[in-house]
Image 1 (cartoon, rainbow, N blue to C red):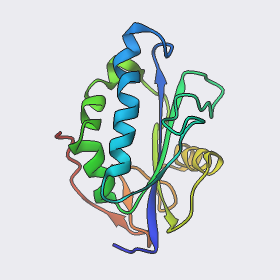
Image 2 (image 1 turned 180 degrees about the horizontal axis):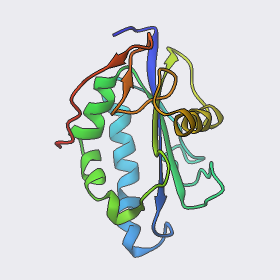
Image 3 (image 1 turned 180 degrees about the vertical axis):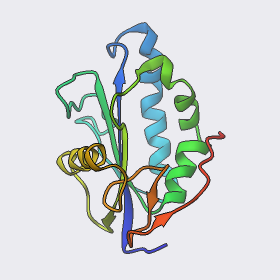
Amino acid sequence: MSTQYHLAELNIARARYEDDDPRFKDFVDMVEPVNTMAERMPGYVWRLVDKEGVGTMDIKAFDDPRLLVNLSVWEDLESLLTFVNKTVHARVMNRRKEWFAAMESHHLVLWWVPAGHTPDLAEAKTKLEQLDREGPGAAAFTFGKFYSPEGEPVAFELSMDG
């Protein structure tokens, strides 16, 4: 894997409930521990945080106030997949339908950034819009249609086992 590039990811989710709704409590309670774990993972580089430096629950990047964002950077695909699928994060993923409404457009976009570059929400939203408009390509892609930093399609088996 090239150390000249890191993997950026934006994922969004539309919460079914307000932050203080008891049905959303389990998710809200997991945000800080999951984010803390992410920061300790091998291959973690950076993540967007709110004013308190914890999560992104208070960051409203879209017109919909229930649309939550997560923006992070990882050294490589393997590091991100290990965090997503082999940590407590997988328990969150297993309950996502309970807490989040189905999205009509893409809810995850991946792209390569030069090592040392910190993407902002404007860049991330542009990548998500590009993915919605053009489908997966070298500049904006998904786990299902992944590309190398050099722009070549990469096939791998995506395991969602925790």
